[in-house]
Amino acid sequence: MTRVVLLHGLANNEGIWDPLAGHWRDGVDVHAPRLPWHSGGIDGWRHETDSAARLAEVLDAVPGGADVVVAHSFSSVVLLDLLSGRAAADDPLKLPGVVLVNPFYRSDADDFHWDMIAPTLDDFPRTMAESIRLRTPGHHIEAERLADMARRMTEWIGPYGWLRFFEAYLRTPLFPVDRVETPALVIGGETDRSAPVAQAHHLAARLPAGECLELPGCGHFPMLEAPTRFTGAVHAFLDRIPHRVRPLADA
Image 1 (cartoon, one colour):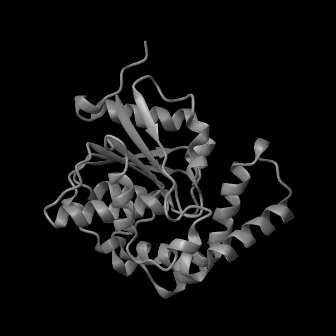
Image 2 (cartoon, helix red, strand yellow):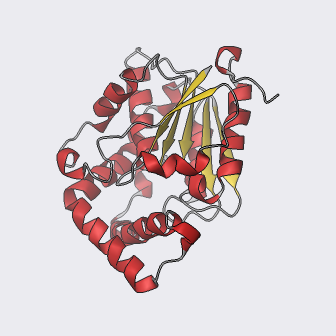
Image 3 (spheres, one colour):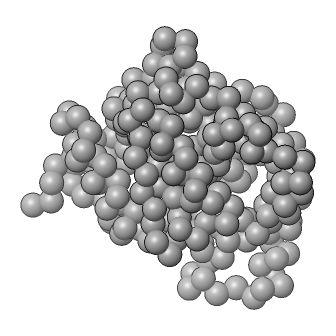
């Protein structure tokens, strides 16, 4: 039995993974915990500055421990922070594998410049709108209503919530990712406007045991857009890492 832990991103919740139900093959035991930065918990988290420590607590609470952790968007950055920090402290996180989905990552601190702050901030409501639209049955929602819902969500997240995200993003070039020996699959959506797929490629190239998979036609939420392809990619990754965490093949 392989325990796969699914970590949702900022201002989402464990329901983001619901479309994957029924696509997991036999032998995969899925856990989807609610994280401190979930859609209903921003108020209790946004003033904190050590999200990696909070994530470590979540992973420690998984019954039996995690075999493979799949982290999306902001959570992929937090997981990378935890992995690299523990590796640098010679106390590596004992995980057979991780999947980093649509990560926000830059390998050079000079890649961040003043003129990119405003566009990144302005893009935030569009990302929220994409999440709302893809989770709406039939993906049909009136444009003005969608924009209003996204605006209300960003207002609720507020400046502190957004700054927690942006601070983590700014620190990604400083993460000692070259110390992370955990096998890692980095998934990027070909059409992702929030975290361009080039960032997934750059991160995979920096990780000693990293590999990148680009999903054609997918944006920032591939688990919603292509659940069959997404779970297929995770299954294929499981088959490439040590035997003790491989799920049983389909009969």
